Length: 636
Image (cartoon, rainbow, N blue to C red; front, side):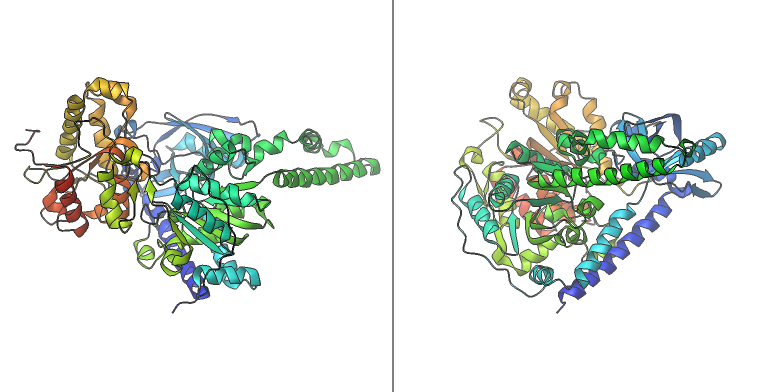
């Protein structure tokens, strides 16, 4: 049986495999033969136009570039280019691609303009000189810093001799069992029984507790109340998540409960709502910052021409000493005045977090976090509270072999399967009609979910039904691979989906959708199908008044969201019963459970029926809703 140290060593090997794969894929992607494919898939713009440069308020050099959007990008608002991400400049050189050796960062994205932060004047000079000779492009880079943080964390976790940490490590991934204190907290009136039980377990846990929150069960609310309850007994806690969006979400809810939050992270990737709580913003707001700024300006402007006299040197020495003194004081004040320190898992390894230690670490969306990233934060804590749902989206692992060997298996999954005593399942959901909820409850949650009375029978219209499957098996539809990409689409199915949506809106009444602000989500596992559907929806005059109420995304784009009506385009339609991405049942769980009142699935039952999950799902629709087989092809 694998012990804790060998477990961490194996993770190190798998993470190195993933890093090597990503580097190889990056080199492959920027080759001249694959640039056109990258333009279709995202992550690359070529050629670009340099329109100017300027300095931002922090004095950093910014290059302004524009690019010509492809047809797909004009209809695709899921851009891979986001503030804070690394980009590299390149140019084509015959049969080779040459990279300019500067890691740059996206500062701002708007329409077809991108502002890119450069490392300095030397990078600007090199880029401009190359731009005079040839066409340049930009490619998303590899985040090697995150890999190094995770590798360092695994090494520290495996080699640590600190008895406190070793004890925690053995409970999390070794053979030791979790322990609980006899500690009772009064139930919170506005929470249900399972939520209060979860908070009781969090407060009582000595090493680990897990809040397992299926869709719509109030996981984030329960986590916030758990943090507030723990802060009644502890001075400060660390709150992390794998993404900046998740960190900002939990931080914003905590600030609404009047909890002082210090948000650590790149300001470019922090939401506008949380910027006031960011380390940089509060640093500049500190009463002593004015004096520090004056000292910094003086030292910055000082030149050797001002002399080297003894008095001058003594004055400079005193200023530098005062500079360091103020920096330490401001930093310590910010941490001391904050009850919650919030950052991503990787952000917990930032320099300003060195030597910080916390009694309790909360990790939200733990089921989407790579285990190596979790250890970066766990190294700073005495006990760990995980919150998430391992039956929904897994973490992203690009290397198939690394995933097959277990890199995509999360710490939360490991603890749930080996230490069930620390798990609290939230069992009441406040999102879905009971018929929509029933199948995922049966398949994923051991039939333990129940619908809150206020949502159990909720419908878009009193004469409507919550479930409809449009079966395309009798129609001459077929999937096809989109040129220069690995993605699939099914144009005939997309047209049928649009027709189905039109007929559904007309049957309920367009004005009813407008008056009640009924929102609609259209989901497909394939990005090419998403782009196709966006183009088709834009041409529908009937749906124009509902444009702001319709969202079209991949499954990942809908994680954490919900809509009154969800329509799923499955795409797959072939005689070999190949279903590709649809085999990832956790993603289908996410897609299904976004719906509040109406779930429509468009798909070929003959292609899908051979898989047990879809066989039972189709039967559930037949028994509890409508299974519609169009009599003729509406696209002919």
